[in-house]
Image 1 (tube, rainbow, N blue to C red):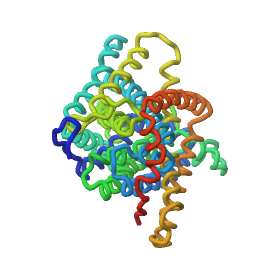
Image 2 (cartoon, rainbow, N blue to C red):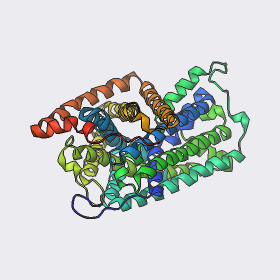
Image 3 (cartoon, rainbow, N blue to C red):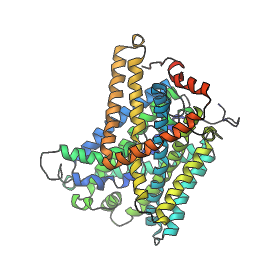
Image 4 (tube, rainbow, N blue to C red):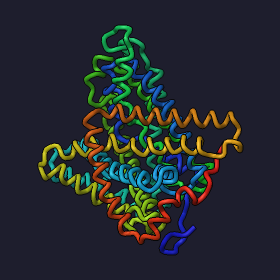
Length: 460
């Protein structure tokens, strides 16, 4: 396999693909999750369990779809193959905007943890420099090639997974049921309200499950390894999430946890005494965020690369060097940097918050289209060539993944959906521009290409 410049490209093995999924799922948000859901009671642990089942179903669907179309682009490819160019573009546009806006938000969050490590005084100028460094160091690792992306992802995932797993496992030995607090916030038996409310906060904990599918073209034996990486990576993240949250719930008194600004640090201090827990967790958070930025920078380049191959994004995004779409990496880093500069210097109230709000909706559009595409392939395929049991199983998984994705949309809230839809529709003019620039013959060919290119092959 060669890049557009003729040089051979390296491909990810299964371990790297797994860490790509885990690293992208586990960012910086996990370090505040226990305190965020504590006000709803321990019913939030049940919500986490329900969401984990939905996320695994979604991971299985992506594995099935990658078996059909083992190409870079993931949800974009599936949507375009099923529903044509316009659906594919909406998936790519939505996901691309989500990635670089999320990178800016991750960098800003990382600066807060750096302050804990350095103990220095805050200043907007220094914070801006630190945030830009957090954006560009992973970008440089990406520009160095897929080999360095894989190395950074593997090392950062191990370094953040082990401390979190340590807290989770050791915390069980210090577990005190009296710390758990009530099952529901008001102590009543009405748990459905708390389940829904806590789920709305937890819903986006599993965004990133699609990472291996998006990079399928860079994964060795993608027909098998993408599905494995998606499921194993999601389960690995779930272990950290569930055990870590349970350990914090059982070691930090409920009334203190509700008001905690560093729940994992409080848990370490409760287990071992002293006040060194904050430094340990801050270090783990910086490593976690750096690894997530490394993976999401790659995702921000892979999606427009796939769309550019089909003429739906500018051609410059469709060129690779050392296995990485360099234009996509640079564009995402520049856009995230601009947003970060606005956040620290421009003083434009609410702009950063609005854009971050948009990402909570934008992440769901590719999921909905991809799971709907799987339903389409199953119902529109060669029914006589697939075992009825496998057909039923795959259809249940696809519908479960669609329901999970729909729940993500509902959990985003009215403001996120409103802002997100506006931003999504703004991309239509970009689509019109790209399609209008094509020669008429190519436009006609692309209009029917996804249907006549090849018969979908059902994978059992």
